[in-house]
Length: 459
Image 1 (cartoon, rainbow, N blue to C red):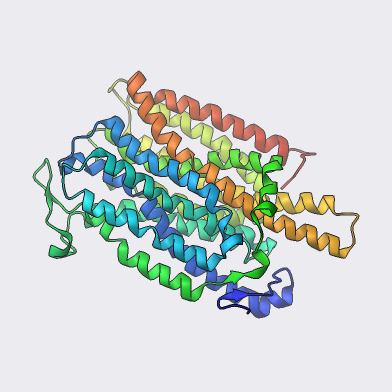
Image 2: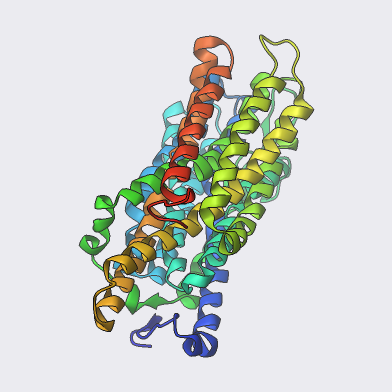
């Protein structure tokens, strides 16, 4: 150790160091990181539940306004990820995890005050939904940080566990919030209930308040329990070389297809079901898909460690295309027909596919960059090759963070595509056709650059 909480020497590719010291420290940081990331996802996706209940609590927002509230956290979160992806090497993982987790208390507390008064202007909710994007930003820094703690042979496992269990925050908010808003958990401290349009009493403020003590505890755990790595320190200029790397942009595109689909479907599903299957209470089922998708992510990383990320990703996109075709079949058309049971089953299967794809794409990134740098440094001496591998690690972490930023824009485009499609054509079908075209492009990229025989960067 050098400064408090900072580790000066970190050589995880050395088997003896990993067995004696590295594994224990890496595990400690991972298991503090996971709940912090879970809470970040919960705050990020608050409006996926709250938007469904606002009008019932006395507000009078249009369907398009409600879709905007579900889409804006993803837009701001994706944009913040661009900056967050470079923060850990500059500030340190311990410091940045503490700060970024504590900041999530701002939108949670503001939401608790805003929902108590049905005369609260719409712009307040716009501002809160944008601030909920702080939770989305945390993913980029969290993943970049954990990537520094594990050897390349365990990258799929470590990133899959951090992201997969962190993604459980989506199902946690969609399961917990519908329950806590029906109870006066915090007594007079939280204020009285709202009387719903159906006569039911709602404590919608609990949707924000319930996360405050957990966020405070997680921030303290990060400050006192995590570490900064001196070897992970780098300037923005060292990391910015990724913007000249073709494979950075290709992996960003693929991650829109996997994670962007996961977070977009999560944000939009309750409101989509409410508009297309009005007789169904979507909040009874909303948590299932994100739950299984999150649990599938570690499995995707584990499988990719053994079978190769490109092959797994290729077949994920094949099945995603088939899934969209089936969802179109099960949708009602002009309010007639349709099968909610079939639609739900296919949706859940697609969530599982996005989870597997999330794990496999993130497994591809470190393999791609280590391969390219090893190829470029093949004629150098040992010191030159070591420097090349260090740079590969820095670039891999930056691409993990930056691709997660670009991928998160799917969380904006999917809900907004549904809203626009419904407003223009009367149904979401046009949005689904756009998704098919996009997944076909992802399939082609995966096959050409990473999966086919003679691919430029097989992984």
